[in-house]
Image (cartoon, rainbow, N blue to C red; front, side, top):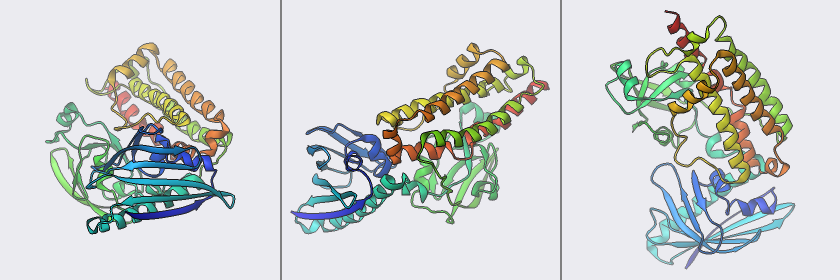
Length: 399
């Protein structure tokens, strides 16, 4: 057998280094896109990445906070191999070493070097996640500056778009690549960087995998029935500074919510309940149904945060779609502008209170804490990204 080795020293507790190989949420934060694991001998270890690559194996041996050995069999390997991870306290931190055993065969030589390169790069990312919370796969990923929206059969017909697969835009971000190249709301992207864009959560990230801010890519889209092609320069991703203090994070988030909620509430000035209930078209949301969607967003934030704290992350195959019955139910339970806006404020307050009560153990798990906090502290796109939709719905009701 040939042993391929990689190691790195991290300024992080031993228990968090061990957890990085035995917890599904932790594995997602530095190694793969989705994981499901059962950390005991013969327990499953299934990892996959967006696209077609995955590894299916199981744990062979575990010594808590000392050693993990597992079977590795990826979708491109000719046979299973074994990986041993040892974690050792050293110099106020932890030394992490990986030894990957492969057959002593010339046919495995190229694969062995590939393992070495991949494990070395992945351990660099693990160091970043454990020490700073920053996932380099995200930090180095470019931004498009778009607000993706649903793309249904009815919307395609209403827009006159001759395709049923693609990504419809709710809007674009001022000053970013999408806006600069001329994209706008209700454009439907069908191809990006030579990759087809479908009605799913992953075709777009797959299309820009390996790209960085400053790269230029070709984007094909429909504006109504007209098919157009533009060159887009990918924007560099600004990464927010997340304070590793629960109360301070809640305070910073509150400032964003304050602005966002005021903007949303301002959309309803002078509107009646009947106008707020009216749908611009049978398949489009009313202004209050859009508020219901924002309320459900806050409830999702809370459920998602709970899954991170527990270490059993909810999301696997995407974030799902908007279930119309759910927004209808929220409006039915709060059938007025006053009640809906009050419910939205309560939901936001509950999110902020939850953050302030987060336990110290979770805050010290920088990968999960930073991941949630960085989304929270992005410009408040979800809350304010729907204001034009609310205004348009009310304007349609006035006609």
